Length: 459
Image 1: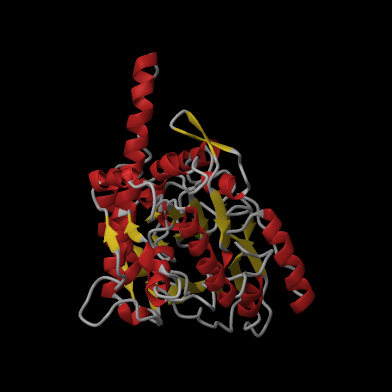
Image 2: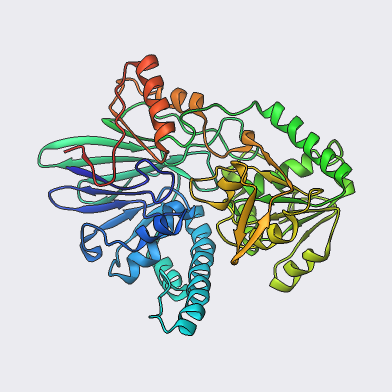
C-alpha cells in the first residue's frame, strides 16, 4: 500500500492524495490550487499516474479546493466513479459549473490581450461542458453507509460539520494479507458552527490524515464574535457607507444569512438593505433547503425555501449586480468569491474599497497569495483590472465564524482515537502545521508528520 501527497501539503488549497494497492489506484480529493498565478499554474501539471489508470475517486466535500480539478481529470481520460455524499453531488453540480465559467472567462480575457500582441492563445483549465460531463460520474452516498467501492477497499462517510454534505472519510484496505484503516478528516467543522452539526467522533484508525488550517490558533468565542458583528454594523451605520462581505457561496453564506435573521433586531439591520449578490450562493442556498435533515439550525421556515430576512434581496443577473454600484450608502453586499480571487466581490471592492466610509468584513480563511489575504494583512493599495486602488475602507477580520475547527477543536477530535495512530497533517500552511505538531506531541505524545508534495507514506 502506498499513499502519495499530491496537494495541500504545506498549503490550504489543491487537496489531492493518491492511494495505491497492488491491485487498485484510488484518488482521494481532486482539488484546485488557488492563490497567485504561479500557484494556480500547478493545476495544469499532470498527475504521476495516467488518469485512465485510476479506478475510483473519493471526495470529502464540494469546495473547489477539494473538487475543482475533477472536470480536468475527466477531460484527460478518467471515466470511473466519484464517490461522495449525495448533498455534495448536488452542490458540485453548481460549483463546478461556476468554476468552469470563471476559467472560460479568464481565458477569454487573457486571449484578448494576446491577440493584440500576436501571442499564442491559452485554453481554459476546463470548460462548462467538461463540468457538465463529469457530473455523470458522481455516485451519491449517505452518512454511515459502509460501501465496498473496489475489491478490498471499503468506504464510510461521516458528518464533518464543515458544510452541507462534508464528510470524514473512513477507508478500510485489504491488500496482500494486510488490513489497514485510513481516516481522512476532510475539513472539520467548528463545534460552535451556527448551522452545521458537530464533527463525528471516530475512535479507530491505523493512520489519520488531519487538516490543519487553524492549527496555530483558536477562534474567538462565538459570543464575542456576535458582539463584534453587532459593533461593526453599528460603526458602519454611523459611517454612512456600504458593507462588503466576501463569502464562500457554500457554508459561510448560509451561516451569515441565518445569523442575520436571528439577530436582525439586535444588530439593527432594519437600517440596511441586504443583498446576496452571488448566483452560486443563491443556488447553493436552494440546495440547503433540500437537505434540511443534515444540519441542526432552523435555517428555513416551514414551507419556505429561502431564509426569512427582512430587507433582503438577491441579485442573480449581472445587470442587477451592476445596479448595486449606484448605491453609495446603506447596502450590505454578500458576494463571492470568499478569498476575493474572482467573482462579483472584486467589482464591489473597485467601487467601494477606496471610500473611507465603507467597511469590508472578512469572515473566512484567506490563503497566501490571494487578494483577501492582502486586504487582511493591511495592504495600502490593491490591483484590480490593471488599476491601482487605494484601500481606505475599514477591513474587519472576524475569525469566530470559521467553518474550520480551531487548534483546540483539532486536538480534541484527534484525542478520540484510542490507540494514538500516526497522524499526517495536511491542508495547512507550514506555520499552522508546526504549531499543531508541537501541541500533538505535548498532549498525546504523538509525532505528527508534515508531508511535502510528492512524499510517500503508508508503504
